[in-house]
Amino acid sequence: MKDKKKICVVFTHHKLGDLIWQIPYIEAISNHFNQKINLVVREKTQAKEILKDCKFINDIHYNNFRKKIFYFYEIFKLWKYYKSQNFSHIFFLDKVNRGPIAAKLANIPVRIGFGFKNQKRWLTDKNLNIEHVNKNQSEQSRLLLETNNIKINNLIPNINVNNNRLIDINPDITKYKGSKICMAVDSFELYKMWYEEYFAELANRIHQEKFCDFFYLISAPHNNHIVEKIIQLSKRNIFINCSNLNLMGIIKVIKDSKFMIGNNTGPVSLASALNVKSYALIANTPVSELKYSRIIPILPDDYVNDFLKNREEMSKLSVDKVYDFIFKK
Image 1: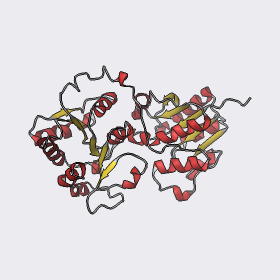
Image 2 (image 1 turned 45 degrees about the horizontal axis):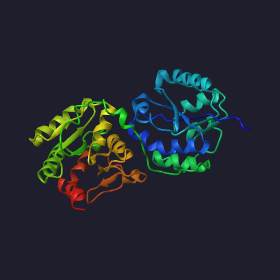
Image 3 (image 1 turned 180 degrees about the vertical axis):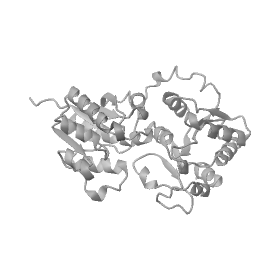
Image 4 (image 1 turned 60 degrees about the vertical axis):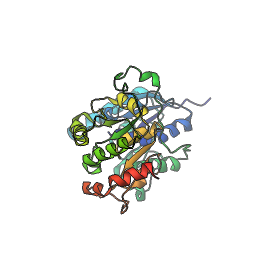
C-alpha cells in the first residue's frame, strides 16, 4: 500500500482577486492526488471566508510573508508549519523564495514551483523556462501544472458559498424591494478606476430606462468618499452604500444582484467566480488576462492590449459605450 501523500499549496499574493484566479489550479492539484490540500496564503486574501465551502481544501493557514527585517523570521515560521504537517509535496504558485527555502530546510521530499531566478535552487521537480517569466500569474500556474503532467479540468474560477452562511449577514442591506445592480467603484490601483461622474451618469440612465431600481455601490471602507461622491453627483435616491460591508456582506449583495459592473478588480472577479454576470471596465490594462474567466470586458474603441497605467485612458470609455454594450448589444 502506497504511503498517503499530504499536499500543500503556497500562494503569497495579498489581493483577493489574485487568489481567485488561482482556484482552478489549486483544485487541479487536489484532483491529481485525490487528496484535499492545505493552503498557505496571506490573511488579507480572506481565504478562510471565501473558500470555506470548497470541498478540495482541508485547511487554510495564514502567513504574512513579510520582507526586510522579518525575512528570516517568516522562513522560520513556514519551516515550523511545514515540519508540523509532514507534507510530502508543496506547490509554490508564485516567484517568492521564502516558501521554497523553508520547504528545503524542512526536508519536504517534493517541492514544485515556477523556478525563476534563485527560486530554482530550492525546488526538486520540473519548473518553468525563463521565457515564461513575463506571462501573467494565471498563465504561469497553468504552464507549471502542465509541465508536471497535472490535468486541469476547468480553467474558469468557481466559488461556492453556502447561502445559509449569508442569512444573518447584514440583514437590512437586502431589504430594499426591487431589482439591483452591483457597481464596484474603487480599485487598489488608481489608474484602473472609471470616473465617479461616469458611474453616476450610467446609474441614472439605467434607472431612468427602468432596467433597475437600486444600485449596490461596493468599495473598500477607506474609499467611502468615492461612493459618497457618486451618490452626490447622481442626485437620486437609488444607491445602497456598501463600503462598510465585510467580505461576506459583499458576497451577499453580489448574489442579490442582476449583474455586476465595475473596475477590473477583486469584486468583479469575485462576482464572476460566484457565477453572477460580470462586466469589467478596461482601458489601460491587458484584457488578455481575462482569458480564463467569465468576465465580459467593455473596452474603448481605440483600446490597446497593454499596461498603460494612466487613469486618463479610462475617460475614453464613455457612458454611451458602456450603456449600449450592456443593453443594446
